[in-house]
Image (cartoon, rainbow over the protein chains, first blue to last red):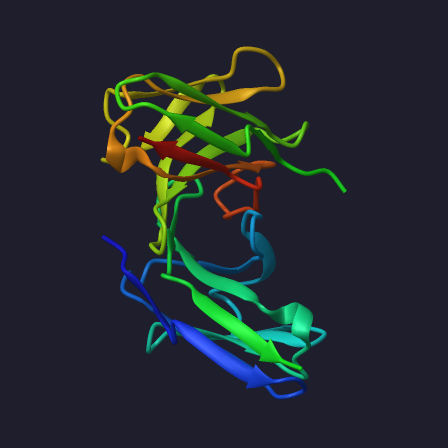
Length: 113
Length: 116
């Protein structure tokens, strides 16, 4: 089955710096990769996603890149702010299922003011 | 903005007791899901539900678990006889549609289940 690995597990950056979180997946048939932000006491919230027909997608300070050949995808947050502090999860869809996902183990991001 | 809601936010129960976790998906969504997240671990898929029946379930979703959509708005997860290892956050999610192109899932805030 699919296996999604996520690194690092914790990340601390200074406010204004960039943060990068990386994920790898094992099933080459996966074609949809969402990223979720989970704040304390809340459920995961979708922040950006990418489909396998594109290599990069950007939304203001957040970008995601996908390398299908290497089977890895990354989340990039630029100009980080304290409110970016949260746990971030990557996920990959399980092909031929009705929206099942495999999640990474999460990255706890702390942005230091 | 429409959102998925879940109640209660925290449920404490004794081992062997039955619990029902409730979710109200986004009103025009058609697919519903339950996930589990044991403290410090990955979010794990439990079950998906469409057209009033289970469409997929994981190996975690054994005979102790059941789901139901008793009316047009609620979506429930029942655990018949809770075990200590059922202690986790349980998330409900809903999707507008699943047309073969994977659609965005919207998660609720979760219910923290503590089994003593």
